[in-house]
Amino acid sequence: MSTDTTSDDDRVDDCLAIGTVVNSNSHMDYTVEIFNEVDRERPPKPDECGFGQPVFIRKSVEGDEYAIMGVIYDTQLVDPDQGRAGPRLAQTDQQQFTPGYVEERTTLAGVALLGTARITDDGQIESPTYEMPRWTLAVEDVVMHCPDGVTRAFHTGENDALQLAYMERLLDIAGPLGAEVTLALIERLQGLFESDANQRVLRVLEKDIRWRSSVDRGVMR
Image (tube, rainbow, N blue to C red; front, side, top):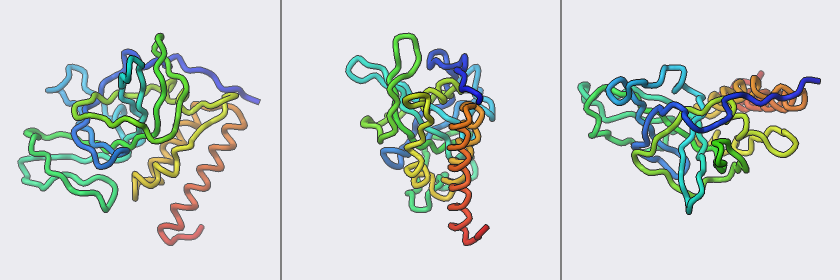
């Protein structure tokens, strides 16, 4: 039986900033403007801010540091010269918004929150929770690229057991793209959790999500 290994990139310090919060659709659903060459000398590459990419936002609460964890579930391009009303993220019942502050072509990403974890003094995370975060994010909060080691730590419970307690909420927040973003996360976790027990859990979850997705589309397989 294989065993899970700890990645070297298990710290939240010195992670790449990929964008800032510009809007919220709910307490769990935020819009992020992705940095470009004008904003940062080192903007994120496409694979660092793409669909299914885990992210986090650092938040200081009463002297303690927390990582609010999330995932990119949609992206939209904005070109103000085209006079568009603005982008619309995944859910069909979301209100449209007009980003009047956008003066250049930019990319917006929808980020669904997954939970929180406490940041230790050495930059690692501990005590992950998958409940709804108690604190709201703020406009201009910086969103960071989440390395694989931190992603793995967030999904690890007692006895190195895999935890995906946010799954039903993510499916709801991401709407039509809920199944796809959940499958993208499962694929990522399959490369991070090597033990046979965790691989079995991931295969069962993958099968369940694919079945639900096919039923929702009226396709029985």
